[in-house]
Amino acid sequence: MNIYPVNARPSAVTLCKAALATAAFTLTALFAPLPVAAAAPADSAGAASSQPADAKPRIIILATGGTISGAADARSAIGYNSGEVTGQQLVQGVPGIEKLATVKSEQISNIGSQDMNDKVWLTLANRITQIFAKDEADGVVITHGTDTMEETAFFLHNVLESAKPVVLVGSMRPGGALSADGPRNLYEAVEVAASAQARARGVMVVMNDTIHAPRWVTKTNVTSVQSFQSLNAGPVGYVDPASVRFLAPADQTSHTPYTLPKDGQLPRVPIIYAHSNMDASQIDHAIETDARAIVIAGVGDGNVSKPAMEAMLRAVQKGLVVVRATRVPSGFVNRNVEVDDDQSGFVVAYDLNPQKARIFIQLLLANGITAADKVQQAFAATY
Ligand code: ASP
Image (cartoon, rainbow, N blue to C red; front, top):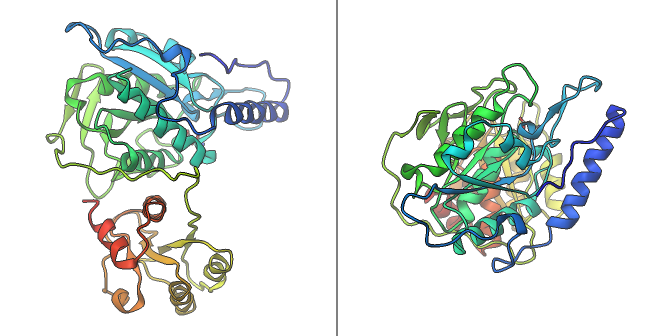
């Protein structure tokens, strides 16, 4: 489904506007909640459920945009534009991909992942559920911007029931850049999604020959192709064009997915970033504007200044869930070390980074889990 032709672009400003208009069209057209039983788009239909034993794996690529769909524009003031190339065009640019699997692509959105949002998440979750329920594919690959890829991966990990492979992939360099990493990353993502070893591994991220679990993976460098790392755990496997290797057997523990919010919106939960000289204003603003919870990206062990701590206590009094995470890239925030969490009614995020802790508390709240002790149990149960 090629609904995003690459346009001739007279100027960077026109180009940005065109990209936004295209994204807006896509949002309008595609973001209406997609019921699980809805009819599949025309270009994804027709996968038979009884495949011959020697048939190639069937992979559906869900394209969302990002640098992997970016095209360098020599006339633009900026280096390139995210979301210029369709999923179908991406596949056509990867020689040999057709030998790995029967690949079809669908355009879900065409946005930079800095604009990723609940609507796209729900569309992705519903479409993937539908694909596996109707046996349309053996695996799904999602092309995605790298800025928030870890968040989409973590969200999907928590809401999808099927453990069939769902591989998120992006690129650090746009198409047309010297040594663009997108084609190889996409090849390897399809290779992983199509591999027998990935059958029961659920959501993964594949970047630069490395396979990561959503629980751990994070973007660690603004530009490096080796940006994606699982700091507290290490990758779950490696891939190159000749092999897929996982480092441990698939996790067989059952995974109860969280239910998607019926109104299509996750509760509002701001992340508040701690720093020296921190005052209470942002926490008080969250209370005044009816946030349901706040995640503190604390210094060190999830710490904040005294005025901020007093505001956090006010937030608990007002019924907000207060989650202490850390702005430090690795390590664990544990309960009752420098802060008396028991007495204060706080929750700690352990090693979930603030952006993943935010998604997790959103899902808990959306599923009616609101008491601090129950929220804390749920955070502890993500291991
Ligand atoms: N801003 C881009 C995005 O996240 C960056 C990238 O994809 O690498 O969509």
